[in-house]
Length: 432
Image 1 (cartoon, rainbow, N blue to C red):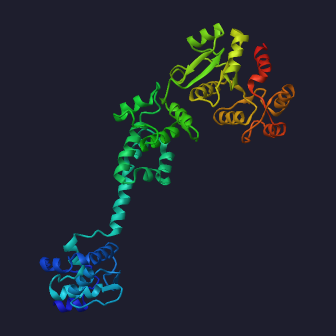
Image 2 (spheres, rainbow, N blue to C red):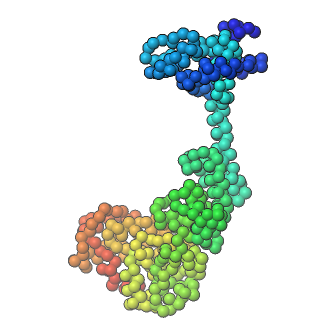
Image 3 (tube, one colour):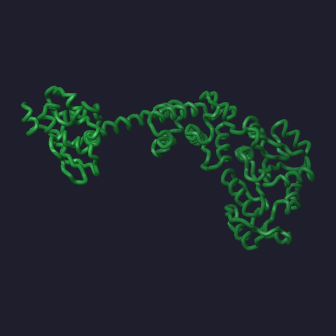
């Protein structure tokens, strides 16, 4: 086939895959002077993009507001001025024909661009390779589910579908490393006996900070740990602390505490109960050595003043009482969950104000309880007995255990703290 045949009835699209003959040699020196001119870099880039999309190399390409150098380079390539308008327009099939007739690139424009800038990978191939790489990135997680944690199958499926891994990792290579670490951690959970989170991270990854809040690895491991333990949705630092603890990892095992009085089940608790003294239990104690016994009923209060007064007044005669000290800590929730799981009924009392209702609601979402003098009727009685109560302030909140309670607070507008109803609470605790 002659050069004239190739340019006239050949392949202006430049798809070299249609040639059955070996590729014709390219005159690299002349090609570099013509198509390799910096003033034609825009043209070469347009051609490469079309080749990547597997589009025909025909028709015009246009450059708006070209420089004088870009116009001069196009004129040298075509052998004529390409026009004097504000835009520079070059027909790709014309360039293809010039390269073929001149012998600079007998196989046309596609061969010339490939020789000049390297092979062009079709975007379809790129996408297929990337999709395969993303599929392969989950191999460690798939192996974990198959061999060690079949109960994580649904979670792993959701993780593939929700895009979280792609957002955290950005690339398949990073995702492979991230999911490999996640699988390694989950294969060791739940930890029994419980260990500190930094110690677990150091032993698993060689870095005590590998599972610090906010890291992609911590996000995925905590998500998987929750799936293992069935821990409910939530948010915030205390929720994360509690979620880690449910998997046997103690984020801050000593500073998270709960107050008790009259509770038994360990040598230390038994001594405190016999002496009528309050006990302070840490999260570490509760996860490593929880109470061995569970009473039929435990009263729960919001404020330490209630427990302290009960110790002063009732001493060793006080029935089991737990104080959550405001927002329930991981230690408080761990203890109350443990008691509930072993058959203990929980009765709760808190402040009659909007903050108190929010604390009570947060506790109820995590562990079941029934109200202890904590209903609309109890509030109305307390207001009637406390004419000097301070006015209620803040944003209203709900009360699932008694839908009439928020309406009563709004109607009467008085704030009743637990300390104002101590006599009633102590009377309940003192009854045989």
